Image (cartoon, rainbow, N blue to C red; front, side, top):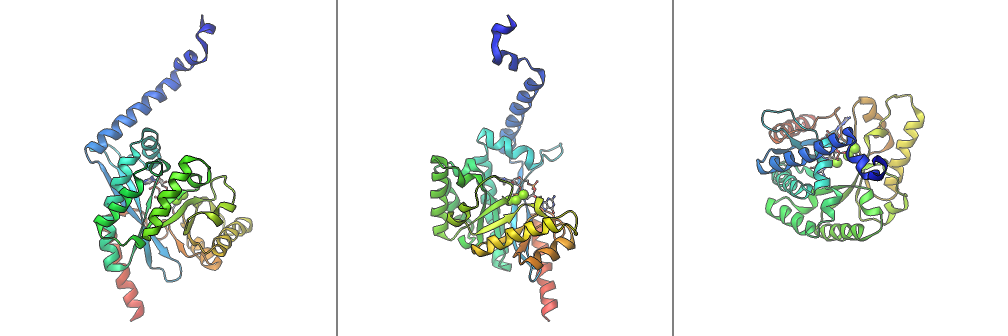
Length: 287
Ligand code: C2E
Ligand code: MG
Ligand code: MG
Ligand code: MG
């Protein structure tokens, strides 16, 4: 009888997989409730110009702190939001909130904004229209916004990639920029960098050498920076944690850096204070 039940039955009764299914369903239920209760906020992490050390932009990062419970990390809830489609609603809220916060920072300090966009959002036929409306409603100039996408989105041919490309073409027509996030972690060919509608490469944090004496790792970072520069792309290094990382990136000509060395992601109010201090520091240096 066990044999006749077949593969599917066997899977259903595997207690570990069964538990994973329950956890998954529960996470999606909590996400839906969290959205209904407005439990999501946005934190921002500075992206620093490596030449002058000033804050050039901030990256919006979704945060979820359900009342009376510990924060749930994006690495946990973003995949669940993607699988369930709830990322479309969550992503729109993050974009609207972030554009509204960044409009004031841009007015006061010329600071730009980057926002992560998931593949699922780019498959939504209404994405470009929603994004355009979010930007227009906020007063943030379109050219001050960069959308961060991952390399897989545009590379795999098919209707999803076509839809994504058409959204990005529309939004780039408005002046919005596009960055490839976590560059170097995917498996795509390099030829696409030449052809795709992108402005910036964000070099994944796994490229930052753990050991300053690691010349092979340094050669790898140099190759990525040179490649990006030869294609006229702005380079941003993620995971800048040590002064050695910053020195290396400056030496290699990387444009910008982001990481714990400069600042951790922080709530909007802290960023407002940080920008005021950044401006004061720059004024002191200039004076
Ligand atoms: P990401 O877009 O690559 O964002 C950078 C991540 O690196 C953030 O993690 C940030 O806190 C972390 N980080 C920054 N500096 C350092 C550093 O010096 N060292 C190390 N080890 N890590 C650093 P976070 O906030 O946990 O977000 C994780 C990922 O979740 C993001 O990676 C992004 O892929 C996704 N995510 C976050 N918010 C959103 C969102 O609103 N929409 C979408 N679609 N994805 C999001
Ligand atoms: Mg990102
Ligand atoms: Mg990234
Ligand atoms: Mg990354």
